[in-house]
Amino acid sequence: MLEDGSHGSAPVTRKSRSRLRRERDKQRMRERVLDAARELFAVHGYEAVTMRKIAERIEYTTTMIYQHFPDKETLIREIVAHDFQSFGQEFRRCAQIADPIARILAMARVFVDFGVQHPNHYRLMFMSPPSSEMKEANLAAIQADPAQDVYTFFKAAIEEAMRKGLLRPELDDAELLVQSLWSGMHGVVSLHIAKGRDPWIEWRSLDRISSLLVELLLRGLKKD
Image (cartoon, rainbow, N blue to C red; front, side, top):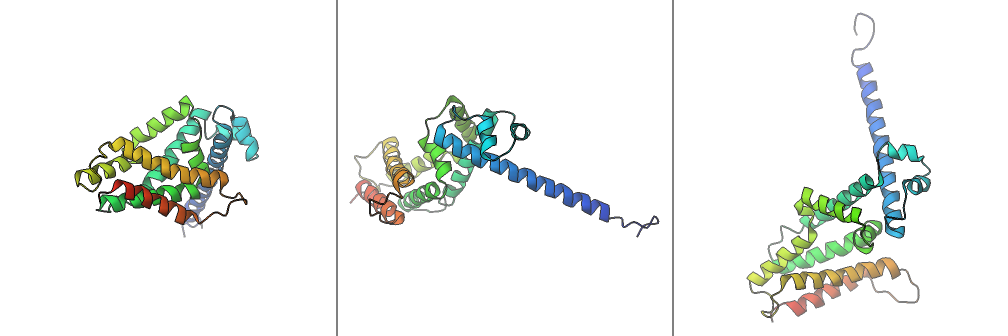
C-alpha cells in the first residue's frame, strides 16, 4: 500500500482490463463486418453491395463501419488477404509429405474440406465473378505472402511427380494437369455448396465422393 492509501497496481490493472475488453469488442465488430460483407459479396457480387447494405445486415450504422474500414476496397482487401491466408495455412500442413502423389491426394482433401467448412469464403474466392478490386486484392495477398499461392503449391507437387517418373510419360504439361485436378475438386465443392441439400438426389457422403474422384484422377495420371 502506498502512502496515500492506494494500491499501486490496482489502477493499472483496471485500465489494462478495460483496454483488453475494448480491443476484444473492436475485434468482434470487425469480424462481424467481415462475415457480413463476405456473405453479401458472395451472393450479390462486389459491385452490388454497398457499405450501407453491410451495415444493415448486422444492424450497425454506416458510420461505425467506416471507423474500421474507410472504404469498400479496403474491406475486400482484408477479406481476400484473410481468406487466402487461412486457405494457404491448411495446405502448408501437407508440405511435409515426401511422396508427391500422397501430397497431391492430401492437398485435394484439404481443398474439399476447406470449401465445405467455409462455403462463403469459397464462394467469394472461387465462385464469384471477380471485380477489378478483387483481382487487385488477390494479387496483393499473394505478393505479400507467396505461400498463399495454392495453385503454385499444387503445380510444384505435379512437377516433382513428373521428375521422379511417377506419371505417364505422355502427360508432360504440368499446367494442364494441375488445372484438370483443380477443375475436378472445384466441381465437387461447388456442386455440394449449390446442390448438396437437394432432396431429390440420394447424395453419397462428400468424403466418399471426393476420395473417389481424386483416386480416379490420380489413377489416370500415374504410370502403370
